[in-house]
Amino acid sequence: MSSDAALARVDRQPRSERPISFFEFWPNWLFYTPVVAHCIALGLRHWSPTLLTAANPGITAGGLCGESKTSILDQIADAEERAALARYTILDATGTEADLSAAEAVMHAAGLAWPIVAKPDIGCNGTGVRLARGRDDLRRYLAGFPAGQRVVLQELIEHENEAGLFYVRHPNEPHGRITSLTLKAAPFVVGDGRSTLRDLVLADARAGQLAHLYLPRLAARLTEVPAQGVRVALVFVGNHCKGAIFRDGAGHITPALTARVEQFARAIPDFHFGRIDVRFASLAALGRGEGFRVIEVNGAGSEATHIWDPRTSLAQAWRSQFLHYGLAYRIGAANRARGVRPTRVRELWRLWRTQRRLMAAYPIND
Image (cartoon, rainbow, N blue to C red; front, side, top):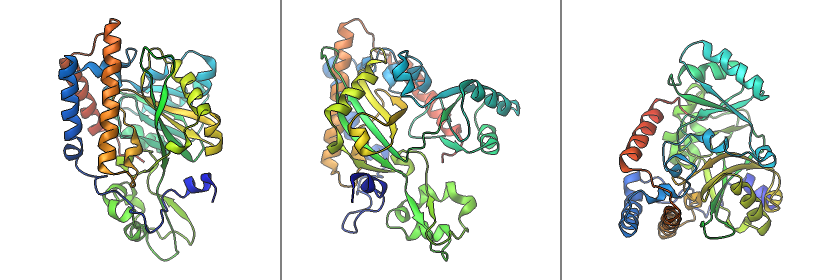
């Protein structure tokens, strides 16, 4: 089987492989307690608990939380690198029926056509991300979106394959590197012409253990009986905590891909640390640094998400977290020496509370 075929079947692991790791869906407090303790120790060592917010001076709080997604992308002025972005526009939601007409107007101005991806401008973990195939989908989405907040309307990149590329460059280094590559896949079940969608989910080795993630968003379709051989995607958004499947793709990091990612990252002023999420045509093209489009850039709050591969051990996952947060603090220290001020604790607390409040108000994701 080719590497691309293997990627397409990433949610069909051999029976000898466990479908999820034992820690993959632990409560956040349990998995992240050692990580938080490590960050506290790093803050004490560097005399600043929020020093990692200085890792990316051009992003609010370094991208740790509360940042605008489009404010990062808007900084890219180079024409070649803007062409690598999935096209997008923004809508200031008012919570009224006028939002749909306004959305269509800004879509037309940006050259966007159906289908599109609608998502919050402030958020994380794929919360509130929806695929809108037409006016009715977008109308429903906007009706449930909090007034006074920005909606991002983004071109749907048709490539099925998605990856998260974690980029790190110390300010004193001439070149950065990719420290993690995660291959992402949308889980699906296959109809047999007899079973309901609910039964197919519950019978699946992996999905059955995560039914609480899939069944609520499929509530209106659970009694459907998919025809023989019909694939039904269980989630659209490429986020682990929403049920997407992640695989460690470190073996696909090449000098050509690293050079291309470096070129893109350098187009974002003072960007040193974060994850660049892309959709790509094939692993072969990705390895050549070709055939991908960037859908999102995340800063200091992002993870090297290969740790959610079920084959990753808990020790390896924590080791990766410690490594990356250590790098973030060291980069922040170097930037502080250049005159960059870390975000104050009080301001960071305000940003985090605002993001948390908004995420609770967004529509359910696809």
